[in-house]
Structure formats: structure tokens, C-alpha cells
Amino acid sequence: MTRVLGWLAVLGLLAGLVAGFGLAPREVTQGNVQRIMYVHVPSVLVAYLAYTVVFVASIAYLARRVEAADRVAHASAEIGVLFNGITIATGSIWGKPTWGTWWTWDARLTSVAILFVMYLGYLLLRGMIEDRERGARYAAVLGIVAALNVPLVHFSVLWWRTLHQPPSLLKPGAPAMSSAILTPLLVNLAAYALLYAYFLAKRVRILRREEEAAA
Amino acid sequence: MWKDLLVERRSKETLNGLFFFSLLLLFVFQFALGPDRERLAAVLPGLLWLGFILSGLLGLGRTFLVERENDCWEGLLLAPGDKSAIYVGKLAGNLLLMLVIETVLVAMFAVFFNVDLGAAWPALALVIVLGTVGFTAVGTLFAAMTAQVRARELLFPVLLLPVQVPVLLATVRATEAVLLGEPLGAVANWLKLLAAADLIYVVVGVLTFEFVLEG
Image (tube, rainbow over all chains, first blue to last red):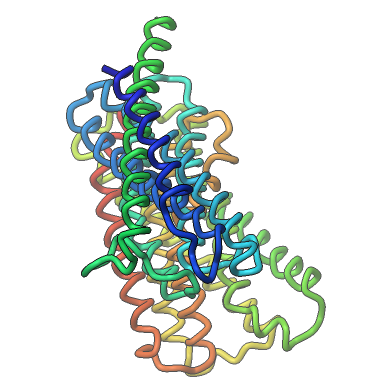
């Protein structure tokens, strides 16, 4: 099952590469730099998905006390931080030629950076508590606090300042891009979601094996 | 019950130490930024909240130290009835502690940096109380979580600071406006955000505290 998921993810990524770098047209003003969007946007959306899974799994763990839920939260947080990091890195690479700077304290950059440090702290907490059961409980509490904090971060940072272009996918109404760009983006998004599911399944299994080995 | 006990003990050790610490902070800010009055005035709201947060990190981090050092942690765990009562008690104690320290800090800022509080003080007090409730609500919860961890002096700020970004942004903006003599209506956005943050943090703290105090 996991293996099938893995191969599907590989196929999806290949299709995404072909679509993003081959089929998609060259953007008129930005040139080829724009193609980084096919990596940037899917990874940020997958990071959000991963953090949502952390939130749900944390609640499930506190309510039911199934260790599987805790492992899902742990694995998902790790993958979320990974994709969050990719988002920041690709954004910087795109920002340098386009905005003329690697980093700026724009609203959406800032909120993504805050998410990044918040969940890094989450992983740090997990790593520092030896007692398995206590670590799971504390992490679940933090996972809930962090997720509920997201809307607050979003609005505070939005009012603080903004420079980033408004969201191109997640907004009411029709997407503001032509289908020639949108289709490769959606292909990549699907591929990244598959990749996330594969990583999650794999990581949860490794965590379980580690615990079995330690027990 | 908890609150009284707390204030009694704290008034001796933590409070004195924190007063001295905040006085030293003033000196450090002054030395770090040089004697230029204009420049100091421009960054004053930020400095003020930096002072609050640094004092708060030290003060709140000690919340459960008394129990830890005197082996009363088990006492907390075994306490009959609703665990959230302990949280509310600790929160109230911390809130009182923070507000006392902040009052002193504001007074010292007014004297040392020549700020005319004049008519602005009721509005300033409102902003400070709103911000402190949010800061303390999360701080108390996280202090309980980090109390039993080896590197708690490190972990506590690492967890708390990212979560506190919205509160920090909102309070600094609101303080800035208030010190400039603007009416509170001008920062109604920020005040609403602070109120929402306070509500979310306190509710989450009350609901999740029992999971932290399980073992």
C-alpha cells in the first residue's frame, strides 16, 4: 500500500516537472523564474495540510489516547516543517530576482516564518521529553495551541504590513490565472499531496518500529 | 487558595529579583541605543514590551518552580477536584505579578525616558492589561509543560515567543498609538484582536491544563 503510494508520488512529481517546466508557457514579465511557483505554492499548501493534520491528531490523541494518533501528529509535524522550509527557500530564490531581495518582513512571509519557528519548537519539545506518554500529551497540547494561534498570527501580521501578491488559489471566485498555468500547478499540487501521504505513512511506520525496538 | 499562597511566597523572592532585573533592563536599553532622545522615543513602545516580555519570561518560567523544588508536584497531581482551578489560580497569581512589575517598569520608563503619560494612562493601562492576559495565559500553560523538562530555561522561551507574536504586534502598535495621544478608536482592530487572543488562550489553557497535570 505504502509502496503504491510512493510510486504514485514519483509519477506525480515527474508529471509535475514535465507540466511545470515543459508544457507551461514562459511567463511574460518574470520569465522562467516564475516556474518556481510550481514548487512554492504546492509546498506551502501541503505544509498547511500537515499542520491541520497535527491539530486533528492532537485532539484525537487527548480524547482517545491512541498512540497511533500521536505518531501521526509527530510525523505530520516533521513533514510540515520540511515543506515549510522548502516554501521559504523557494520563495527566497524567487524573491531575489523578482523583488530584489532574499527576504522582506512582508505579512505572508512573516506568518510563514512564524509557523516555521512555532513547529520547530514543537519538534524541539518532543525531542526533549524522555517519557513517551508525557511527551505525547505535552506535544498534543502544544499542537492545539499552535493551530489555534494561526488565525491570530494571520490577522496580526496582515494588518502589520503586506507586499506579497494576494493568494492566487485559495480565495473566493475563479482563480486569477489562465488554465495554461493553473493546470500544471494543480498537477504539482496533487503530486505534493501524494508525496505528503507517502512520507506520512512511511514515517508513522518508522516511529512505530522504533518504539517496538525500544520496548 | 492557590493565589494567596503564591503571592505570599513570590513577594519575597521573585518580585524583588524582577524589580532589580527590570531596572537593569532600562540601563541596558539606554546603553545599547545611546543617549539620543529622539531615537529612543521612536522605539519606546517596542522597548517597553521587550522589557515586559523579558521580565515575563523570567517570572513566568518560575511559576511551577516552587512545587518542583519542594517536591510538591505530586501534590498538584493529586489535588482533588478540577485541575483547571489550579490553572486559574496560577494564572491569577502570575497576572498580578506581571501587572505589578509592569506598573513599575512603566513608571521607570516615564522617569528615565522623559515620557509624559498625562492623559494617556487609562488607555495605556487597558492595552497593557489586555496584552498581559494573553501573554500570561499561554505563559502559565507552557510553564507547567516545561517545568519537568531538563532544558526548561531554554525550552520555555523557545516555545512561548513564536506563539506570542500576535500579542506582541498588537500591543506594540496599540501602545504606540496611545502614547502619541490617538484615541482608542484608532486602534480598535488591534484591541479586538487582543481580546480575541486573550479569550482563545484562556479557554485553551483551562481546557488543556488537566492533560498537562497528569503525570
